[in-house]
Image 1: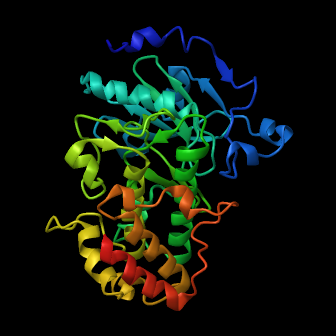
Image 2 (image 1 turned 90 degrees about the vertical axis):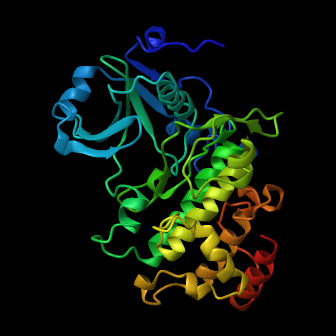
Length: 357
C-alpha cells in the first residue's frame, strides 16, 4: 500500500481543537484495569484525553525560535525542545529534523501521532497535540526530570536511590500492562529502554517514543517485521533473529530495564557485552547482591531487590514462550510483583528459575 504523504493529513488536522466528546474509550482507565473493572462513567469523563492542533507560531514562540539552548534531546530523526506556552504550561516539542528525507522515518513520526491518540494512562507520555506547518511536530507535557538514562547513567548526577528505581520499575510495568491489555488498541512498543522512560517531578515514569510501535490485532498472535529496528542490548532473540514481534518482545526489554535499575549499568558495556548476558551467570548462582549497583552502598530494600531480580530473570529468558506476560506481574489491583514468596524464598526462586533461561 502506498504511503500517504504529510500533505494528505492537512484536512485531518485543519480544525483547531479535537477532543473525545463521545463515549470514553474502553479500557482507558487510569488504574490499569481491564474494561470490566473501570471506574464510573463520571470519573472517566473527567479524565477524557484531549489534543490540540498547534500553530507553528505558537510552538515557535514557546521555544524561543527553537533556540539551541532549549534543545533537551536528539534522536536519529528528531530533536526535542523545551518550551513554555503563554499560559505558563511547560511543553516538549518533538521536531522531525529537516535533514530527514527518509520517508520511513516520516512514517514512524506519523505512527507516533496515531498511536498516542489512543492512549490514556499516567505511566504513558501524554500527547498534547501536534503541528504540521513548516514540518512535523509533536507536543508533549514536559518531563522535568528527563529520562531514566539521563539520571541513572550520568556520572555527574547524584546516585539514583533505590526507592526511585523500584518506583520506576513498578510504574513502567503498569504502563506496559496498559498498552498490552487495557488500551483500546493492543500496542507493542518495540523500544522499551531507559532513555525512552521519562520522569515527572515526582519521579513517576512515563513510557515515551512510539515511533516503532505496532498495533497488534486481537486475532493475531504476532507480527513478522523487516527490517529489524530497535536498540541492541534490548532486542529479544526471536525479534532480531526472525523478526517476530508480540508482547513478549516488550517483556524482554523490560527485563533488561530492570537489570539496569538494579545494577546501574548500561545495556551494553564498552566491550560490547550485553547486560543480560553478564547478569545471567550471577543470577544463576543466586548471588543477586553482586548485580547491585555499588553506588547504592547497600542502601536498598532486600525484599524489593529479590522481587525485581526474580522478575528480570523471568523476562530475559531466551524462549519467548517461557517469559511471563505483563498481566502475570500484576494482581487484580495492578500491584506489581506482590508475590507470595518470603525474602529467603526469592533467592532460591531466582536461582532455580534462571537455570532455564
